[in-house]
Image 1 (cartoon, rainbow, N blue to C red):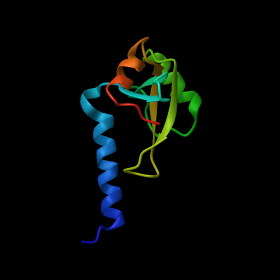
Image 2 (image 1 turned 30 degrees about the vertical axis):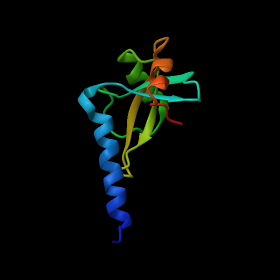
Image 3 (image 1 turned 120 degrees about the vertical axis):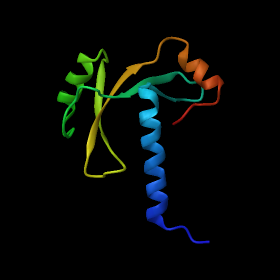
Image 4 (image 1 turned 60 degrees about the vertical axis):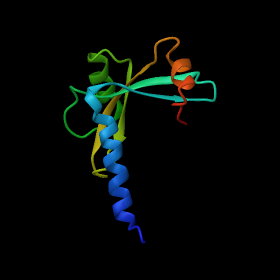
Length: 105
């Protein structure tokens, strides 16, 4: 059975997009073996158009109550960048995420 690279890439992009759109909830990403670094990530609801530089993205995210934001390359459409908002996880959340084995690097 041969797997075609484009089918694998399409499946990976679909999975990522599903994760990014699950119920509009924040995704939590953490790094470090003890879960000490954690941030909540959410697609900006107010940013319009292509995200080509960080300052407009950060401004949109701050308007939504997030302290930071960054431009993310959308794997489904490689020429399209979206604005993702970030904030630190609440105290104790990183440890809870790590205890469930959900840490990512």
